[in-house]
Image (cartoon, rainbow, N blue to C red; front, side, top):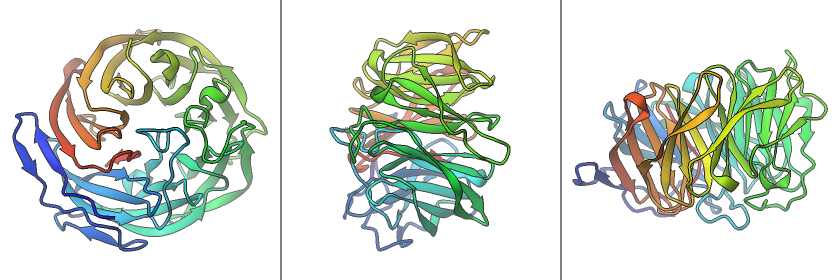
Length: 383
């Protein structure tokens, strides 16, 4: 696989060609590397999801938010495409996840039903391990302390738990839970589950089922990490619940694609959800969400835009700006820098990365666009 050099268009419209030349993966753990980092370097990672050889592209993040190519690293596994997907092969959020304070990176390999564990050294990655995901078509990964949950979206679907031990993942005996969905493998992109995530207190594990049941499935999690035998299912306020995050109060903030809406829910002790409110941005296919500084940024795949939201004191959401930023065709996943200063947005339909500065009041200001990212790449994480 040969990728063209990434091309940038800065906000000033100055065209810059990156110094790095993206070349093919050289094998598991091997890389094409631009040596410009050190252990303190901030990075951006993007998963390619290539069916021939899944890889992670690494970029150096500068203090002004701009990015420069640093290397391409093979996961040793295979990517895959959800059935009928166009811009979003995983059709999920958090297929690429940083854990352990950013010292390790987990990458889903849906084409080989595995998860790759990378050690992270600045922008450089080294394969530590590749483990079976426990099911078919892994597409989302969550972490809470030493617990890791992998969402398998293919077929009936499942959630499988692991423990992080000495930098490696160890499957927890008996901690696999079927989701009981009626789907295929690869899953249909609007029916396969979209995300798994632990609540901030670690007491519950949430899964979105999208069109399969249009619900949030919530498993209890014991102090030892044991999952409840079956989830508590709460119907979403709007159909096709896709991705979610949590606000500062621990409320679930979900995006629901059918009406391009953002909804907030209180997570009750018994795993049920209580709706706090829902609002539409009027765009098309709001599917991904990032949170920074009390503001929610939703990516609209059908509109190529980013919307901004916040919430009232009681947790009810409202739209700040229905078109807070224009990205590119097939806007998909996004990531916020750890300091909350920048938003990085993938557009899988166009093969671009858009960088925005996050200002006062959640205002997004364009910084640059990086072109020549592989089309239909999905999965992003920032350190």
